[in-house]
Length: 228
Image (cartoon, rainbow, N blue to C red):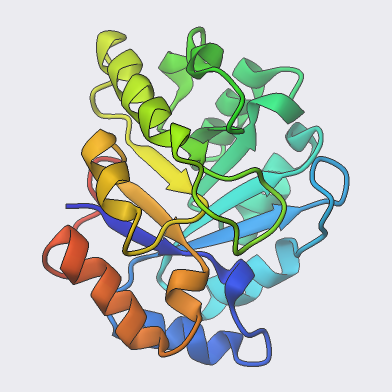
């Protein structure tokens, strides 16, 4: 079993509220929210006001992915806006240990995100602060990219590293190019949480979500695997 976390980066923002409700009614439990600052990645997306709006009317687990430079500046604000988990990038944060602890101090799940070329060993000295690891399976900044095949081995390597360090209960989330053709190999390699953008939002939203959930992962999601 695993979790599909639809990424609203691929949503129709004229219909965002309606689409979030459709996902909830379809059995969705997580929502992935990509925050981009135009510095760490080229694109600019959205921030705290959008998260507050979703939190006000939704019980979904809000999985907030900070693709921003110096993310430690914003931890309190995103937690206050309603984030349930916050991912920071190893490549963008000068003090990873301190920032992960700051996330936990806010009562939020702490996650370290790694770009495709970043070694799994970036987590070596912070495993005691991790609630989740996010592996980018495309280079971050844009939706609709194709899955990088080498990330299957990286997922497997990360799962082995975590298990060897006593982090069997720390799940791996994968983000980028996840669809019906790639989710199987990613799950087999050890991933448990799957961010899907175009594969969910392009076409019939409810049908896409259900197919991705049931065809590949079993019955509709009624548990949150290890993280919750």
